[in-house]
Amino acid sequence: MTATPVDKRAAFRALHQSGCFVLPNPWDIGSARLLQQMGFKALASTSSGFAWSMGKRDNHVALDDVLAHLTELCAATDLPVNADFEAGFADDPEGVAANVARAAATGVAGLSIEDSTGRTEAPLYDKSLAVARIVAARAALDAEGSGVLLVGRCEAFLFGNRDVGFVIDRLIAYAEAGAECLYAPGLRTREEILAVVEALAPKPVNVLMGAPGLSVAELADFGVRRISTGGALARVAWAGFLRAARAIAEDGSFDGLAAAVPHGEINGLFPDA
Image (tube, rainbow, N blue to C red; front, top):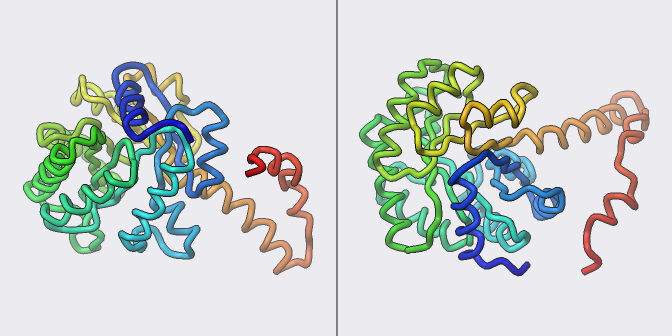
């Protein structure tokens, strides 16, 4: 790899100035390198895809393992990498700040902080604490002087709260606290997306596409700045694996292997060294 972290961060910030770009989510070095070959301009890690590759559930991977994974991804590609940094691996703002500083040292060009607690009885942090956590993340990045872009995420839609006003209120607060890009996984309709984009303008908004639906061109027309796929590409890969493996285990059939990419084709996509 030839691009430095400084190069990657400058390129990443430039992507957020205008237009619309897709940053798909690899889960390992191989998938990251292949996505670079396909011409994408940036990548994002996926907490779920990485967790499954380790045989764990999403949000059940230790911080040190995530940091090692981010270091590997950043070293494997010349593209900027945005870290899915979950909820910062701490409840308190001080803990978030310390962990964000460690994440910045991996070489990432951006990182996101969620407002989800991981607790069923209270899935979102109170707004005041959620804002304080973004403030702490912002301060940590500013202290590092790294140029890492901060993304503020509101997870309300993922926990059944479809109140767009609630989400917009939180995202505006995160923007005022220092988040440079805003993200609400679970936006579905044209109306929801337009409402968020218009309320946050001129701040860039990320939309998650985890299933068939709106196209890149349509999202660009709505003013969306960036589009990610979360764990969807990993789920597609797992779908093929599970279909073929289940056919062998349950039916004694190897028919599922017919859909495999030829060895020579996939092997030829990777360098000799």
